[in-house]
Amino acid sequence: MDLQAFLAANTQWTEENQTLIGEFTYDGFSAVCAAVQKSMQLATELDHHPEVTFEYNTVKITLTSHDAGNTITDRDVEFAQKFTQ
Image 1 (cartoon, rainbow, N blue to C red):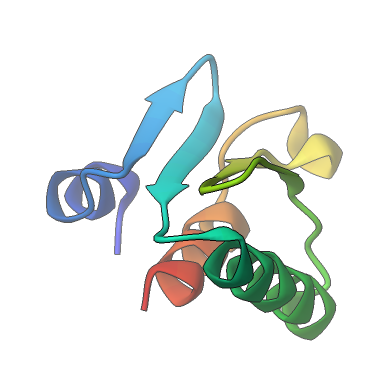
Image 2 (tube, rainbow, N blue to C red):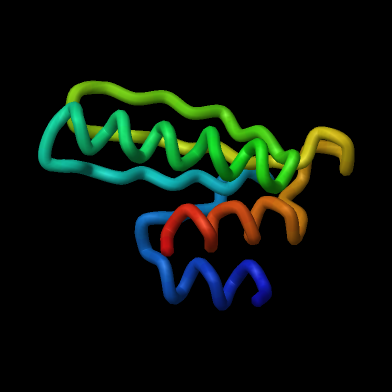
């Protein structure tokens, strides 16, 4: 799936300055911890490590491929797709 199609279908993700940013709101801290854990599992599975920040009920995931010149690649979109599922 190309980036623009992914963004059109997944409004919680945006593109800014060659970075893919996902912002998610959850019902509480336990759900936030589960989302962070999911991101950690995906990072290991895909060998692609995002920046993940979280607060009481929100998680923000920032993806860019440093080894490709700090740009969005298929690896970033794949991570975002799998996280969103």
